[in-house]
Amino acid sequence: MSEVVKFISEAGTFYIATVDGNEPKVRPFGLVIEHEGKIYFGTSNQKNIYKQLQANPNFEVSTTAKDNRWIRLKGKAVFDNNLAVKAKAFEKLPHLKDIYNSMDNPIFEVFYVSEGEATIYSFNGESKTFKL
Image (cartoon, rainbow, N blue to C red; front, side):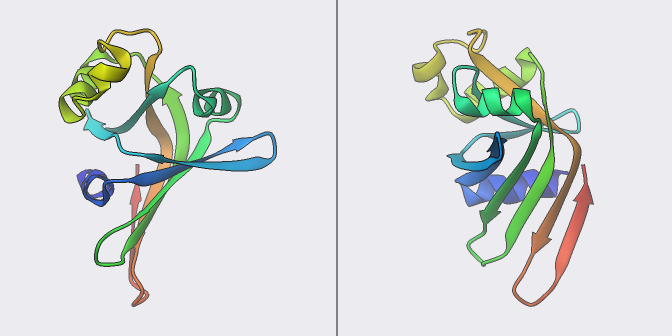
């Protein structure tokens, strides 16, 4: 699991895809955290991504490393009001305080990957898959 989080974190910006009705929606993200064996992401419950994941929890993450390997992570989003994860988020990205003021702001949400799988690919045809 930490290899997956490390890969995504080192890429910096990664992209999360959701579904809105029958239309795909993709947006950049920058917050990924590992906590107690789970991979977490954070967002606002005022954003469309939150509403989309409430309606359909299936999502996918993708990004590319500097060495041109890439990752595809898929799973279901489970929202969780985990204050320890929120505290880690504020430590990792201090500018979250400018957005949410405090980690217990009710619009700041965290979700983890359930029923997940991640695969790291390379152009030479090698791949490595992780069950999450």
